Image (cartoon, rainbow, N blue to C red):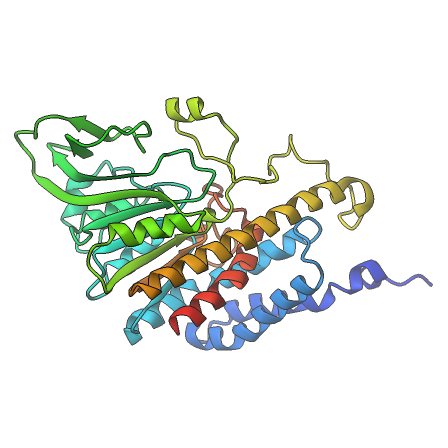
Length: 388
């Protein structure tokens, strides 16, 4: 008699992984357990699943559904981890969020938040909220959009120097200038008064003018530095621009700094109509561009093999980018420039992570299936570097 399908040799190797993922779901559903207890029980299971998937390849084509599931199971515990950091008031708290704007409420609760903000991201995240007047009155602002968080933080007037630190595929040129966040009437915008010319205005809300507006209900002047940090010279610029040392900074990491979905567009197209740019060597994730999936995802010889090869090439690039990034942080540390708070934003939704507000079908800036692996590569290096 033939064995049942799930005990077929091609399927049976996945049973331990799937079994642990099911256990993780059951832990989350246990209403008798406190979240902190759930975290303690779940942590070794999360590690087991991660190690098992890595041991198998890792293969982000065949095993994509498992990587996505692992990310959801991880993300369930982000609020618990963040509350632990806040309650303990650790020396250097580290926060984990899905969408970038989710971190704003944690920044506002950190005592003595650093005045220097190092924002590593493919996007500036400096769009201006429509309800600026209302937000300015809030103790902890309602920062509802993924492209608002940096602006929401500037609205606190606590940031004196903002760095937008970019990967190599972003076209915007490096620039160093003074500008202000300015509210006039109901309009919130960025104001550059007699500053150097910038070919790449990072949003439609930037105004270059020669005279100060007569009326304003809110204004916050700060230094803005936009720097490519895909080479050590970028981190050298950071050191040059930070005059006072030793100093603390917000280490603000959006994972699409290492890999991002998007499109390949020309510089002229980008200037005319800002678009989300696809990372260098990115294997396109749109159905029309990728090789067709076979009926059985275990079939690798023809259909999935080319796409797997492309994704492996991208993984190699991600590893290089993380090494450059960590070496850059080491250079800053040598010059006594260290983080006072750290956050890692996945820049992808949770979908089935157990929190309904995360169940969205937008903002997949980082490929979801890569996120657990990037955490695996990046977080231990940060823990070791800063003794977290």
